[in-house]
Length: 219
Image (tube, rainbow, N blue to C red):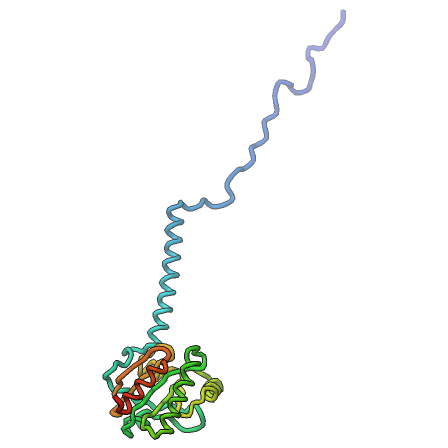
């Protein structure tokens, strides 16, 4: 008789399966995006703020160039001023040159960087020389604005200007007293110091001849 062992084996039960590995973490790495309407609203706010800043800069620049009291109107007394001469020593005094001597004045505001001034200023210079040669009492006066001294003097020389020109580097007279925007600007002032005409932009020969004729009593 053969004796047998009561156990069939010592190993683990093959019917027991190993547990499955844990599933990988699929959590989003980034924060949830805001709703579409909120994003559109935020973009609109940013654009509106940028536009407001741009308008503030533009309006502020314009108002600083035109002064606080507006442009001196026709019929008003031309504000007097004294500026350092753009050529040599001394000063340029409007009243001393004009109403103080009962002389009408052509007052021109210009700059070397002003493109229209490059054709207008030689016309003013030649007309002023012609009037002086014939003994006219009309006085031409220039105001050079926002220019370095060297640039102003070069421009004056090249344009052939022989009448007094004052330097207005900070537009104290141009904008502060006369309320004018950028050059060229020309004021026509009678012998009593009253503004009788104003041309914004370059003056034509016909316009200049007409005003000179009127200011000198020709009509």
